[in-house]
Image (cartoon, rainbow, N blue to C red; front, side, top):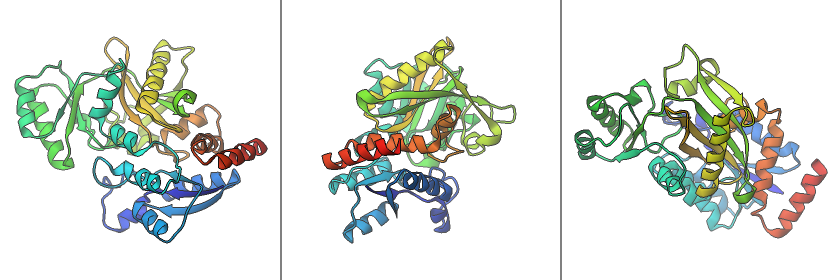
Length: 346
């Protein structure tokens, strides 16, 4: 099977003049190296494609692949993570991870919360601020209990999240919302702040076949920015954050978190592998925060591979399970060939 690899390389965008924060979600060269090495070790033929515009050019040149391992984040707009999946759908080329609709839904944190709330997944009460008029309305008639938490509606890697994101009164709320609207040029999600433990649940598989891989608790060290899993804390996670493996059979909060995470994953239609983030309220009940259908895959720096490592699952096995899940959407003859290939590998 020939597998193409699509990605946004951070160094490439930095060289073009984009900033550190703008490119924070993009991948380092060693991430691409690791994915390609794993695919080759699994016996696949690989082809590095690059970002969405490079994909378009390759397709125009007549290039095709049996499967594309897609980790493109995109640069602009609420549909940026949907760009590569939509292009590949047009050419009927299967790919890893979620389809365009799911990518767009999950990138918009307000829409995501609305979807999972409809199936009774617990999530903090929230409002979406789209302009300064919304700020005035929210300040004048706040239906929530302080403290609240404000962040850009469609960013990852903690972008826009600082200790100031935890707001304690209407004056702070107005100031932080205004600053976020101006800086990120997108709506702001305001939700009730959750003071309890924070979890990220790793999930592999699709639909009924999806299952919880395990859970990491996010524990901020003494030198970290307090109370919030911020951009700074994520960028310097090796020194500021402890990722503690916790198990559902020994911890009721973890068991509840994994149950909620799997329901959210299946409801949203996420595929192959990713993460669901949760935090506990003041009573210790886990609440859904957001979905990550396009989780980072750096072997040492990203949460999902770190979870696999903590569970003694090699990086190679993690990539194999992702590809095996995605390969079920290939043509029947390729599915059969991949299944036979996998049996030989194991």
